[in-house]
Image 1 (cartoon, helix red, strand yellow):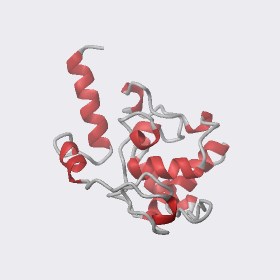
Image 2 (cartoon, rainbow, N blue to C red):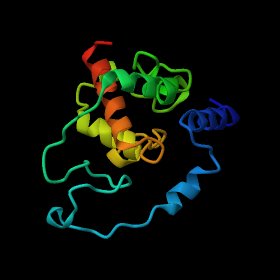
Image 3 (tube, rainbow, N blue to C red):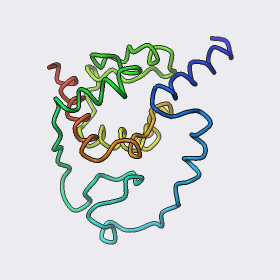
Length: 157
């Protein structure tokens, strides 16, 4: 793939995720550094920018509504991951590595999916092209979209 086409595909991917390329570096700089804490020092609810589950005091509980999550998914995720979650959206096909195919993501748990949607791919050592939605979706919306993604993973619509 030639360089101008790669740059254009990356710009389209960022635009499809609700971010503009010029805004991304500023958003990363705006995040304050967090001091290192032990699990006992962490509050029960961590900030949306932290790469930890929503509750550090107990097991992750997915309390999302897949029906509501479907609308959020179609608006924010389908351009990369495709309408059926196969990683074959118009932008996802151009990404390297390609967008995740949820129907084949056997190791993906609801908790990991929640963290990736909230904090982006880099928070889970995945592709940096996976945008973080923790600033554009609230906690319940993230739970809803993850519930829908888990339904895609299970093969049911």
